[in-house]
Image (cartoon, rainbow, N blue to C red; front, side, top):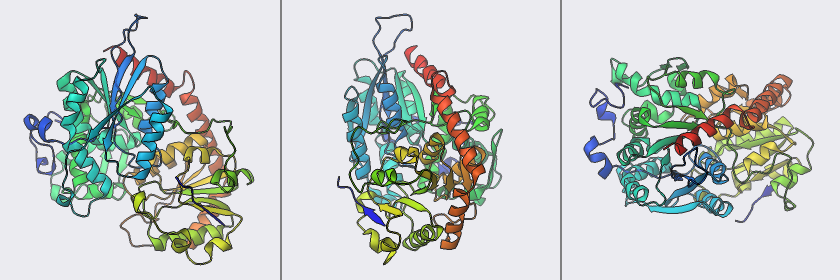
Length: 522
């Protein structure tokens, strides 16, 4: 076994209701001055008249946060898609300091790859995290951003050429949308989870307003036109109405109908039911246009013919994959924000060993990568690396996950079912074995099954649950999925649909064109 290390609503307009005590949003008169927002890559577009060949490029400003639920950044992929066009001028607001080393490296790579993209730094105001003891560092980051949201206003008004649109991450919606509206600028929301999760976000405030006894929690959420989401599938923090995450979630859910549109990293063939319900206003009346523009590709991914500009270093994960038979490798990764317990990691290791299949495992032991100093051999147990030498690689280095999944030797993806990972598996046509760890993962896993991407072990535990998933269960399920021709065929079909969606004339291609046309018309 090789261990590789690389050096580096009455809804939004509703003024009062029985759930106001669960909202963190100040009264409208104070919001612009007191609320904090964390900018995302901002795209700035000056208006471009469709009939004028001499008009300036559309200038779009996007606000963006760091990646939250997956290994790559849809915001960066969207920036890359727009930055290559002559009719769109892009500026990116980056927030300092960054949370993780991966975030800092990602931003550096983005600006290096696209020198035409302007960088605008926004330094967060001082934030006392002790106000929220024990909270996830990324949730604290979102709150710090929300409290600095008013700093976006002078950046937008002072931009030249004039900003015609802002694209913000959904975590900042409740703060950025009002600012944009006050300035007379379009505000679109980039939603980095699935359309099913977007429908949940939109409907939860309505659901809560209808509940007779809010003290009993959220309960099951039956989303009109979509599906019923059992309480056990909901993001864990959402179960406590006093949690910071829940307050942010409800605030954003009430405000989203005031956005000018939603850009969602999905495609029509993958989530036809949820997309139709949102577009037809079955979930919430008057919902903004939904542009399904996925699957988005990162700017670092290798081309689909797997050509490589230079030879991979000996011993690197890609070099190792090059030596393996087609569809023989299980790729294992649980995202850049998910830290699996030491005991569970050892069960995973033993399960992979017992499966008898080759594997490539991107290992993570802490929530924030800068804190991850443990040695692989210590984490996975004495003798493990030696016992599986030759048929497996474990690495703590960053890898290009899209390139890994598109590699012909990869036959299955064992994943936490973060949405980026789901869409990357779908685009590659690789079967996904979903093991949700938290957040939106169980909602995403419902789409893994309904969309044909893979299978979901519903009874496998996630964060906060005591039960260890045993090595026997893991090993047997890996063998089952790797040997299931039906699962493989379904995944291949959804991969074909993904390719059609982004090809010229496809559904996602047309959605992106419609979005750009709307910006130009400003």
